Image 1: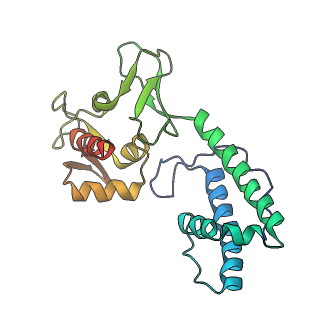
Image 2: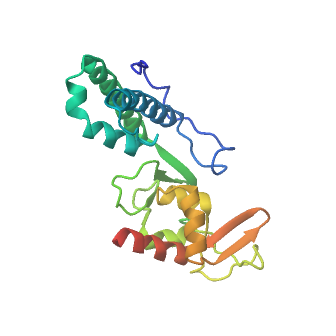
Length: 225
């Protein structure tokens, strides 16, 4: 079995191009931890499937973990049980190190829009809870905080026909990267929801932005479920 006891990398590393969406934060350590989990679980699941002559699971973390859970009593009695325990514990430690880094990291979104405020808007790189509302806070003044519907005031208030002319103070345009980060969903989910819910959109060159109210109405419905 593969040794996963080596420590994770040097922390959160961001790239500003490539990947699912240019400008989206990319956590190399999280990707490495996930790959290690898939590799180790696949190896032990293969042992179980071959020895017990059962159909192996799909190579996803959920399927692999569920499969091994169903065969946990058999694996615990196997001669290699101690090795399995050691490797699983190493995976847990590696994942915990990554989560500890994510919990303290914040992504810079831009300057604070409050008059004369020198601060920068920051958002947690990882939500406090899966069902928590997205939030943005100013680095200079903690009172400058936006949550839920207030986030719509942070978008670009410009007209789709003329990007240099303000349209309405209630018109907010969010990029796919904004939405993916603020609501902690994948870029693919953003595009799927935009098409399914017919979000209003504007295009400026190659960049597409979506109407903030359409986005928030959809996300609020998803959270309420």
